[in-house]
Image 1: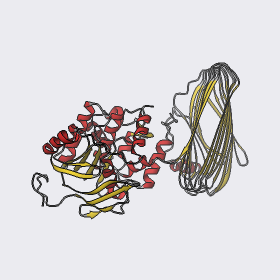
Image 2: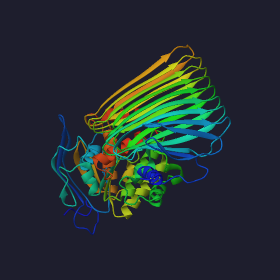
Image 3: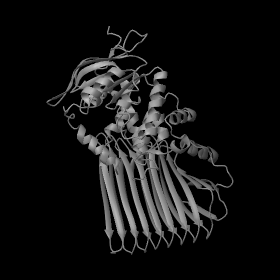
Length: 268
Length: 315
């Protein structure tokens, strides 16, 4: 058992998610390097680190996205290994992911998008989750999840869809990316709501504002765990040691191109 | 089966109930038999039964504005048969009408449904024609819809062909339109094909009058071994004519799609654009929905449903 300053206070004796000596290579590059992490039920955790540290890769590997399934070590959720399980099978166990750049769906209404997988598909329930992220259901339910929505609106719609499925573990990749202050506050409120409902939240971020929403944090760099502990301690270390650091992580192969493409598409 | 039972069966196959509202005009045709007809002021419909089909003449009187959409239900309940429809539609000057036509072949194994339509939209008239097909799971339908439309000055015509429920079967669509000055044409087709479905769409529009505008939009999703071919032609030969051709095809599995947009400009002040895109379902879209608990087929269906929805016109 770890010391109290490293592990969030909990009455539950077992972590909900265990990353055990995880190694993932992309081509010649080692992106996740013997990572061992534990996440506890009902807590908000942050994984913080500079660009290219492997944070998004970690989220993608936990979710089982295409291209992130070949690794050594293990990922266990509720004590069960996720190895070999597809994205939908992991979702069926209660894991979901909020993308840094949410997908667009031409022609698909927000009603249909949020309703997909929702525990309760009633009009009232769909309206409730939209209102919870600060979007007026009367104005938004019949709009399409397409390029007519701003980046911030898409992120909030995606979060509403996550609230609707009542997940056990939410992976949130850069929740503050490309959104304004009001939208960010709504997202922070939703994180508190998820926690109050007993969900575990894993925030992937390089932002101190997002880090402060967490109870506990892991600092990673070049795919390695550098430090873990309570948020104040990690924030201090990140501010003092990482932000001034001239060390540059190499972005994972292809990621920079994908990010640039997303930005270009958003600008259309 | 009696007439009332057949009418009920036709609407039930569409997931709807029979039309009873007195202010809604409606016609029900099963095979070569007119089962029911109800008209409203300003609208005239005459139907003549033929050996293997029916001839229908629709006339909307000058200035008549038919408030409620007219329902026309074509279909065949048996597994096999032939239904040939000849339909002449004439909107006189300033008339307006919307027709929601449903074509249902819920048990089809070997059915031919051929439609030969002629449409005249008079000066300043406005015609909206939505044709929705519902087929059975076997897809034993051969569809041959042919339409020739003429839009007079300031007229508007919008057609929307939808086949999303059941297997498409063998479809051969051939639409042609000529647009006079300041008229507006929108032709859209949205079809989902799978199995060994064969889908051919040839649309041809001529923007012949000044300031005429036209948009041809086709959205097709093909899966398994289905094949689709879209050939949309838009010609502009008058000053300030504006047009756009949009073909979007989603291909999954071993399906094959061809898109051939043809644009031709015969006047220096005319302008026509085109866009054609063929691709598979986006993996990020798919994985997002799968991370909400949908399996791959359910996620694919939902994405395609969006792409083929009336709300999406290839913006």
